[in-house]
Length: 215
Image 1 (cartoon, one colour):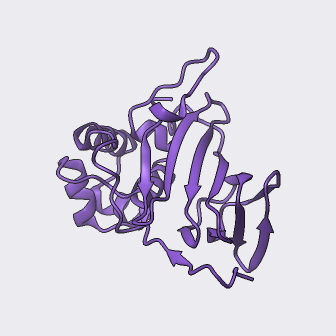
Image 2 (cartoon, helix red, strand yellow):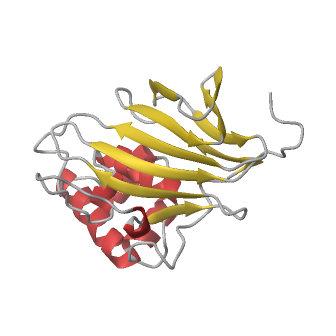
C-alpha cells in the first residue's frame, strides 16, 4: 500500500524526451538505427510495426531531427535485437570495464527530478545492461514488455520501491533484490517520503553474429 503522504506520479515514458544537455547526439543515434535497420533488411514500416512506434517517429529519428524518448530507444533496441548501448554508439571493451556515474548518459528524467543512467553493457555472448535509477518520492516509471527470454533484476540501495510485474506487486526496502521476467509489463514506484536509489540489470538474449552488432 502506498504511503498516505505520497502522491504517485506515473511517468509517460513515450513522450518524455532524453534530456538534451546529456543525451547522445540525435545524428549519431539516427545513423546507428538506420544502419542496423538496413543491415537486417527491414523497411521503415516493418521496423516501426515490430517496435511498436509510429513510422513518422522513426522517420524523424533517422533524419536526426529529434531526441528519442527512453521508451522509444528501448523498443527499437528490442526490435533490432541489440542493447541500448549499441544504439548510443557505445562499444564495450572485452577487458575490465569501469563506469563512473557522473559520466554515464542520463536517458530519462521526470519533472520531479527522477532520472535513469545507463552505466555500461557487458560484452557478448550474453550482454547485460547495468542501470542506476533515482526515483523521487511518488514517481513511477512504467516499462513495456520486452521480448520473451529477457530478464531483469533490481537492487534497492536506499528508499523503498514498489515493484509491479504483471499482476504481482512487491515492496522492497534497502538491501533487497528482486529478479523477474521482463516480458510482462513492469513498473517501478518510489513509495514513502524518501527518494529511492536502484541498481538495475537487464539480462539480454544471447548475441548472434547476424543480430547483435556494434557490441
